[in-house]
Image 1 (cartoon, one colour):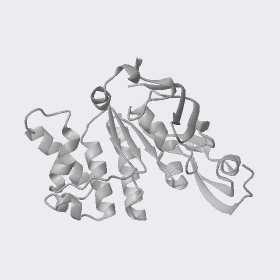
Image 2 (image 1 turned 180 degrees about the horizontal axis):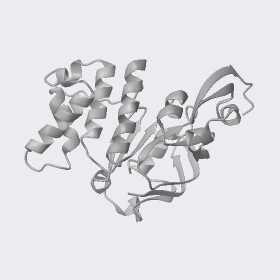
Image 3 (image 1 turned 90 degrees about the vertical axis):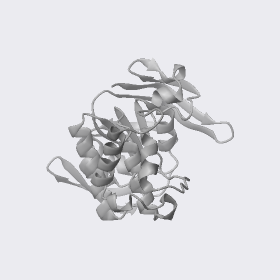
Image 4 (image 1 turned 135 degrees about the horizontal axis):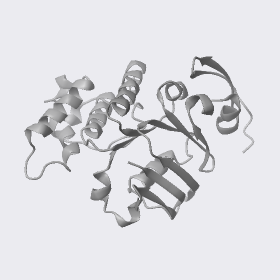
Length: 261
């Protein structure tokens, strides 16, 4: 599957312009990390990709078809989505909350395949013991794992995750990111995730997209190409040393530079 973003601009009616002339093309499976400072439009960009919001101008194409001509239900057959946080408060067991992600696969009732897919997702995320717990009694970290499982069971060609590790401790941040990379490789799936941990992005991403203020693409490429002292100084306003570990750059942050913006 190919996702192409052409000259995309977006602005909220009362919030002003957020994204400016975004041009990107994703035509290979793999783990793509979108990085950039707070407020630069990362979440807005992925919402434009999956049709939650419509671009002010420009276009998003899925295999050559503009999402402007597609219903949200049609887009969701190709692109799964896990938001950064959820306001869900399901008074239902976790297994049923995850089953919601299968809505494009079953009709009147769920099938054996649906149940097997849900249980597999719970197993890989280590939440089998939560299966019959009420969703609204879980911790923030457990909520996040359930949300990721709900995204995995969509079995779409593309999966987008907005800060999927935000409520997880360090061990589970690494575990989830390793899992997403493995799924992308083993299933030839395109997984796009917003990530704030630069060293996690540098180690696990196949491809990195950097957004800079006020909402433009600064650069894209492999982690080795992207993570430079110049990029970190220009985009994030920090001095840093890049220590290569083979093809993986490790970022040793120094001090914040004066904000000249």
